[in-house]
Amino acid sequence: MSTDSSAELDERISGGEDTTFSIRQHPRLLLATTAVIVVGSVVVFFPLAAYVRNKELNPPPDPRPPTPDPAPVVVDPVPPEPDKANEEPAEEPIMSPGLLAVRKSKLGGLQSQLRQIRSKWDELDRVATKWHTDLKKQLAGDDGRKLAADPHLVERFMAVDMQERSSSEDIASIKRILDGFSDALDVVEAAIDDPAVEIPGDEFREEMDRVNETDILPALQRYEEDVRMMEVLLRQAAGLQPSRDSLAEAVDAVEKAAEADRTERVTAAREVAEEEITRELEVLAKRQEEWQNQIELLDERKEADDLEAKAAKRKAQADHEKKMRKAAEELADLERRFESGYPKMKAYLAPFISEGYTQPTGRTYERSTTKGPVSYKSLLGAGVLGEDKDSVAQFYHSTVSGNNDRELGAFPPHSFSSGHFERHYETILKVQAFLREFGPVMAQEERGILAP
Image (cartoon, rainbow, N blue to C red; front, side, top):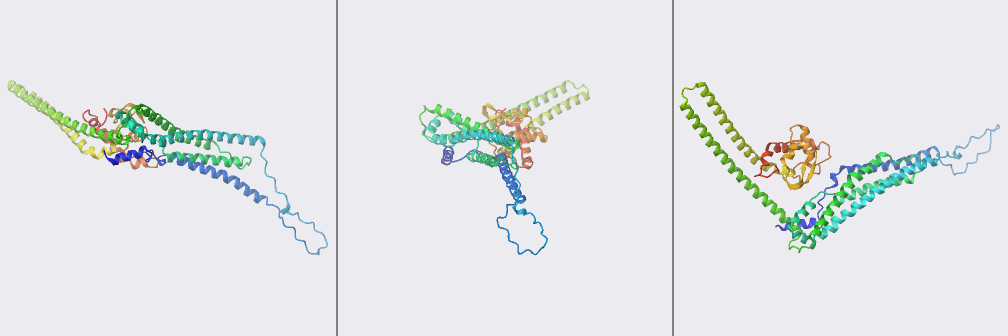
């Protein structure tokens, strides 16, 4: 067991490493932040523009006293023009009580909705803190060593710990979005009696709903489930004697043992396959010899038979032998091409050959009770191995949808960026074609690279 691997996992368990995904994987959070900034800018701009326009139309009176005129020289009196500078500015329109009540009601509804969403974020922040701080600290001590004493509990811990969940940075980003919503509503509330200030409408409400339903609630559910599972494991290990190894060292040992077991199984499966092919070729050669002997015996007994009939029989035998040879050659060629191509494709096949609990069922993956690689039969049944472009797209999106709990390896990850699928289309097509061609070989019991 390597010291580096153990130290790395100790750091991960104690909270030194964040294994969660980044906010860059959530473009919706960036969209929501942008929407809040735009709404806030609009809300502040309109009342300010209205104020400036009112000052332009109704300037304040000139406070300076009028300058006295020189001695009059005009005989006929001329009536003075009215002093427009001293005229009273036009009164701003007054909002009716009914309209003000409606505006306050709409604003109150938005504020109430935001308070409910904030309460869910508070729950998310609390349970995430418990996961990243309390539980990780607990697992780094004696409680972790108790878990390490039972290999089955270590495997269950690994299954829980590897789940993808929102990072602390993601959670903080969600809070900044909620603060943006709150600031926008505060600006509106401060100018509630100003008709120029519009109350945010359905788009604002829908954006708050999207943040809650897409970012907060799924993350909260993931953390709650993982915390419950980890607490169950700790209760089950409470009565055990602590292991000499830390939990990090125990996890490292399990991973190394699993890798060694996979290597041994692959080697054994290859040897068995080679022996079976040799036996089948020997049987085929023996049968061919027997058929040839029978043909010769018949030829000796039926020398008087029609030459055309004999030619037909020989042709049939030759065709049969050709088919048998072709089948053997195709099998050997398929095996050779697979053995040659598999090392280069192995990294791209990670989301299919890695251990996991989910299986493809169409456009997504669903959880099963058995841990192992993806089932070749399930891939066929999901209809994602077709040669048309729609099947390739379905094959890609179902693999990276997030429901597949296996590592992606070198397989192109999920992205909302424009043209991402087209840029990686050739790689995705190559992986799909490899599974379509060599899936039956990979699913052979002696190989076990894919589940049947």
